[in-house]
Length: 195
Image (cartoon, rainbow, N blue to C red):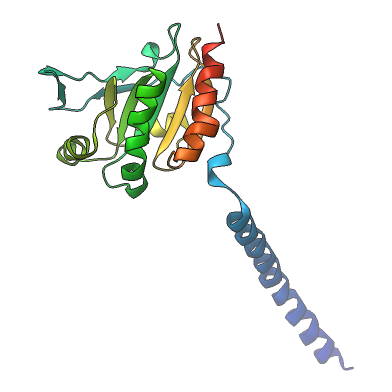
């Protein structure tokens, strides 16, 4: 084989290496995405205090003729279990989840704190009017900064807070009847035993 031919083959091989490497990585990601369960995503915040955040009230939201207040991280825990739900009116799965959040409040009596994510106030109010309002307090996160602090990866997402104010459970994606019974309610019961 001539010198130019060897050089040409070597250049062609070198050009294929990045293409093959990219293809292998893409296949690994595709496999991981198709076999993984997004509701099982770990959170680095599990076992840690809730992030220092503050969520202003949703303007115009009332219950029994009084404004529903926003909340901040100091109100979570405080000797009892809290449930924090990030949601948005534009989120389809949030619509299917809302009746289960209402059922959760009735079945467990846990205080439910809502965070309305990157939403227009009028749309959030319409959503709550149509699908119900299970929230003890409801704040807004118009620019998504609070969600970043909490490590939210998508809507909806929920957290259970221990009486000590630590995140003990994270649920990614909509709560279903099965996950409510199998995961969420047992996690609340376990959290109530923590002191």
